[in-house]
Image (cartoon, rainbow, N blue to C red; front, side):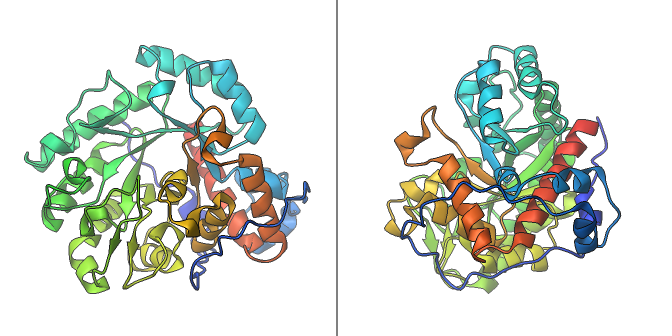
Length: 393
């Protein structure tokens, strides 16, 4: 088992992180028609002066990227199937940070998956990140990985959670996977909640202990805590609606925050934001809320990657405010999200998404000042650091 290494980004940008608070929701009107432009990347020395840090491989690489390439590198996408050549062409088309693997991407064995991912990455100097939702229990993409999930672990000693996630992390790393979106830090004792079977504890104390154990055990891949700020305050399912709670911030701090704080203290590299709202903090979903991103960064001290839950879920909520995928993406980036996740079908137009259009509309938002250029640069640099760190492991 390897020793967890902190992301090099924490040292590189500890003094450069900015947070921008949204003053409400981004309008749902369609953005202007995109203009195909290629804005040159910042010169190396200007980037160096901006960050006030020594030049590194990642800053040099960033300086070669156009603005559009930097924006594209803030996406993690899904394309169905196990055809490595087709997956590689898909990645070449969009140049995302990485690919999320769903069940349809998983071949018969761990060795087959490892070979597939090696082919997809090919000779890329900056490899794609690969991620999967492997919680155990009812959320399991890799059928050969059989360590228990939360449905069992929540009633067992925390040491068994550490063991299970150590086994899980090794199995994922052996298959060529870099990131597990697998540590559920939500907590609830309400059996009617859609998340109940996936929580590691039914109290703040019990969940915190097991979340920390999961992160400590899962040393062979990057761990992700989800779904901040926590589904425990509502029983609704964010796959079909936007769960809403009027829980106060004080109540949240006592009941929902501790498992996330424990996972962060244990060294989790990523936190996934849920599409859910706490109206006493912000009327917007947390995934689009600068206030909630500030709480995670400033109050909980998280310095790693903030990843969205699947952005398509906002559209599936049937709330017209979130019908425009470009507006949602822009709002998430302004709020402070690092990595935008899209679980796409083979033809994204069937779910109302055009990834090229989303990228172009984000570029336009930088051009007209809706998104600070610094926000894009810092997020792109962080993800380059993560990708290079995975290459060098």
